[in-house]
Image (cartoon, rainbow, N blue to C red; front, side, top):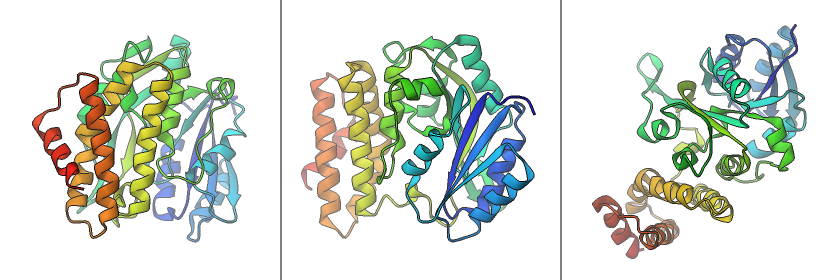
Length: 319
């Protein structure tokens, strides 16, 4: 086996129905010089067995088991400590990596010398025949299309909208040079980490190629499908605030503005729809404070609020 150049970190908890497909998507990569660290985060279903069978059959897979769940951030951090390759990537165990993803992303960094590269992604939604990939959404395209080499946040502030862990490859040196870790014990742990990676990167590449199919589970068990729960909302809002704070602290004003605009356009409206009929007034108060905070900031920065955002702000005043 050739020396691996990239480690893919694959955390999973109770995703036995999907894990085999995720691992098969790694084995189908056109770039074969990879290793993967599979972290079974205290699963009570057959996820651990799927991971164990893969590691027994293919020595590129390394298995780590947590006897009790420690959370996605902790699972990723444990694996980060084991990375020995120049590059690192992430894949959640219920998602699917497209066949040329690693070749495209690793190839970009090898050619450019940049620290991180971000690619496009699409949702994998359930339908009558199983799961079907959708289209590249406008905010994803704004971050990754057209291709750019060796850019920066100042030059390309819209890349701040690509906040997921699993659409990227980065140099492990970027993580270690800046002592970067995922927050533990919270959901949406990748948002502030993504901004730290961008802030500290000596060069950023983006490619318009779709590199991951992000699964929206038919049974509604994905984290992003539980934003009607107040604790999930709190983590979601704090993650967005934390990401903006990273950009502010680094003096990345245009990137922070782009992030605020995107949150108001894309993240807030569905939360407002939930809040309008939510039985807990605390949900509306938490969201209302967040909307007012961002709307006031946008206006102070001279960003025009369109009619939809103005309506959201008016609704928030009532909460």
